[in-house]
Image 1 (cartoon, rainbow, N blue to C red):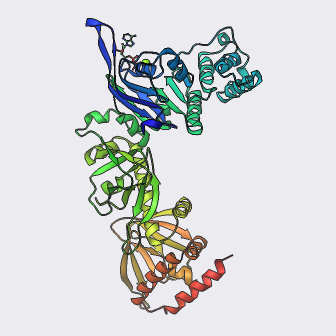
Image 2 (spheres, protein in one colour; image 1 turned 180 degrees about the vertical axis):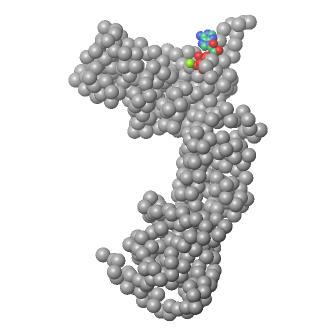
Length: 513
Ligand code: ADP
Ligand code: MG
């Protein structure tokens, strides 16, 4: 791991002052930054962020511990070694210095002086292109004195970016920029990291760019730690940091290895999880079938809310992906409940996702073998309709044109008899569906489906075309639907069961191209 790290810090301590004035500002710092990583350092002022950055940037001598940058140990390194390493850096500070007698373009070109392999024309072209990228295409011939503070900062950023540095160190680079240009330049650095395999280490208090980070590290009193509230604010819109003070339990961090199971379907839910690093797979387990992969989730996403909010049982298994280690923030149920009670925004976001996920599960069970991509596609197109207590969703005798999957609540299946009486045949609940028989046989609805008096019902509605194309796509769905149908018909001999398979074939030939 260490060999390929861009920055590798081990047991680093740092002191300022001498004798009685000697003061420790960094305590046993350990940190690895790998290629393509975009790492943000946050923390209160005076906590040691700039000191750490300047040590990594070879602007200060390492006192104790090990600090390797691009494979070079900086502790005890001589001047020419330091110069050699520094060539691969881009360094941006809060108020970067430009040369006042040079234009913006000439300032940027200066950074390329150390690259003799480039011709003068190449340098001019590169400088112009990067200035355009930071939004200064129309200012390339301006001198620093005729640029605003924000514009000067963008020239400095362009100067740092133009050499495609292997390591970009940035100390509050967006402090002087407005929201839009701040985000733009950070996005540029982000692209640099991802496209060129470089790394970015940025000190910032700017909440608007936290979501771009691969990792956020909190520095407090010279020690590195988890950025709890920043991580929560990325995962949960509306999160308010003050809330953590009110809670007896604090979030903790757990690491899981590739393939490990984090929560298991059927177990009792007690915790909520926010993914900090790596990827997990959400698996639906059904008896007699291989587990179905519903989706993958990564950094900034959360899981565990369904079990906590609906019935207390895990509705799916969450497993670490094969190729990844996973770090999660673990939140106890009491704190989770505080979080959603505290903010309407958080509550709405969690409710919306929960609903989406429950629908995914129902669809995956009702129509097995649909691909995850197809499920996502259907969910985007599906109409979700809510019916109040005692209302009829479909009426016996009406012409059938839709397929219904119950996503919440219970309905009764009612038969209107010839003598005018109603007979309730059975009830159906979330995950069950109706309307398929009629769609497949091109018949009117054979029953009335009515919401039970206790609570309203939500159904996902598919039109005939979508339903038919789904059935035709997947043999397993077809078989499953046919089985459900046959089981229903055992209690109801109105339709001879042969007609089902016959009509399924008819359906197939009609819908295939
Ligand atoms: P941050 O960037 O997180 O605001 P700094 O790294 O600038 O914090 O400072 C960390 C601590 O070190 C502060 O207490 C600061 O006063 C002290 N400090 C920083 N630079 C020097 C210096 N050159 N001499 C003495 N103390 C310093
Ligand atoms: Mg600072």
